[in-house]
Amino acid sequence: MTRESLTRFIHAVEHSSSLRRELSKCKDLQKVLEVANNYGFRVSNQDLKEDALASKVEKSFEINKLSM
Image (cartoon, rainbow, N blue to C red; front, side, top):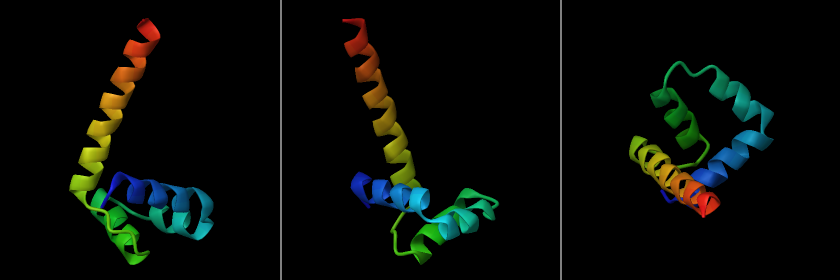
């Protein structure tokens, strides 16, 4: 999955009350991934880890930009 696909999943969660309700019942990350896959989003633990790392790098660049 690409970061763009993860972004689409997040967008779907923000705009679908039924998807949010289903996710609110999830007890752990594995269940969240199962729900995402059931809705046609191919999300894995690795995708989330890579996105978290990319987000940290982006924030670091933003902080450095603000400091200049």
